[in-house]
Image 1 (spheres, rainbow, N blue to C red):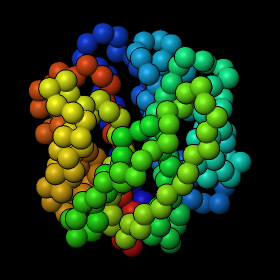
Image 2: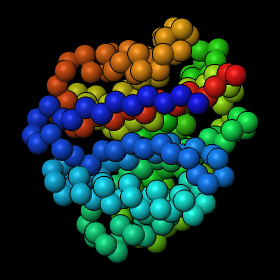
Image 3: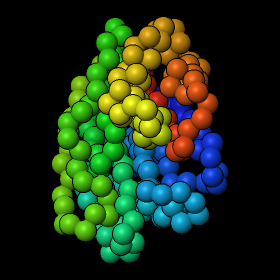
Length: 219
C-alpha cells in the first residue's frame, strides 16, 4: 500500500496542537493507519497527543485490533487525564485481504474511493470520545476495499467551518476525492495536495488540519 500525509497547524494561535497521524506494521504483517485529535490547543494538547500515540503503538504491538486499542486508550485517558478528551480512528489493512477493519472514537468518518472512482463515507455511528468519564467498549466494523482503492482519514479541521456544518465539509471532501483523475492517485503525495486545495481555499483555518491517504496496491 501507499501512504501520504499532510499536517497544517492552525493559522491563528500557537503552531502546536493535538492532531496526529501514524501508520506502522503489526507483528502479523498487517498495517495500522491512525488519525487522532486531542481537544484544545497548545503545549498540553501536544504532550497528551504524544502520550496517546506512544500508548497506541504499544497496545498495537501486543496484537490488539482497532476496537481493543481504542478501549485501552480510553481507559488510560480516563484515569490519567480527567477532563481531557480526544477523538481517534484506527484502520487495519491486511496483505492479500480486501477487507479493512476499523473502529472510531468520536472521530469524523473516513472517506473511501474505489478503483472505478465511486466514493463512500464510513458513517456508522462512532463510539464516544476517548476520555469521557464512562466505561465503554468500542466496536469494530469492516469494509471491503478492492485493490487500488483509497481511504482518506482526516481531522475535523479539514472539514469543519464556522459558516457551515461538518456534514457539508465531509460532502465537499468526498466530491474532491471523486474529482481526482485516476492518474493523480498514482502519485499519492500529489493527490494529497490536490485534495487540500478545494478544502482550504480560504487559507484561514482556526484548527489544525491533518490528512492521511492510504491506497491499496493493485499489483
